[in-house]
Image (cartoon, rainbow, N blue to C red; front, top):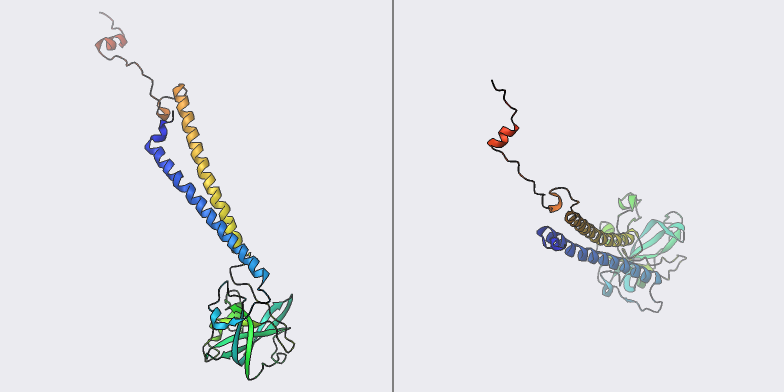
Length: 281
């Protein structure tokens, strides 16, 4: 009854199923792991850094990654150019960042967001930066991407304003080297509101996270569909063989032997028997 499973056709079907099911399960498990990693990263970012965590030198935390993003970093030097970063929301209100470039002892500069002010960007409202040598401690942030910044990423801003905080957007504005990161001061002075550290990219429960969850379900559905189709083909084959053994299958169907049909004799006697009689004269 089940010898058909050893035929070349069914060997191919069985090998395909034996390979397809583990691959689907592996891919589904991998996508589930990606989703869980994003959930854990989101929880870590939401929990924030410990308040008692000591600041580390800036260069020891570079390049910025998921572990160092939000860490307290320290740098010393002198404040240089002051820029405003418009269209930044904080606590549901629209405002702007006050940003200064800090020229460090290494000769390179790091952008420092000294704080936030409400309303449209106005240089007269922004307090000047301290003069002389300063020691700055702030939360470390990765350079922003220009994606989704619109006109602010295309240079359509007045002089003295910046749309994207990062070395790529500042390289044409300053004549010295820049760190590919920025700091946000957590205890600003001069009436500025502190800017909280942002979660690193690809760590929140965004669309990509739920795409991973959706792909997880798809791969498991694929594995179940492969098993369902194998069982359906197997059941159809068994039913066809049973019908053939019971004589319920038409002649030659499903490999059933054709019924023997006696041959009609062909010869002179048969021809004469079938021919109409001739009238004798």
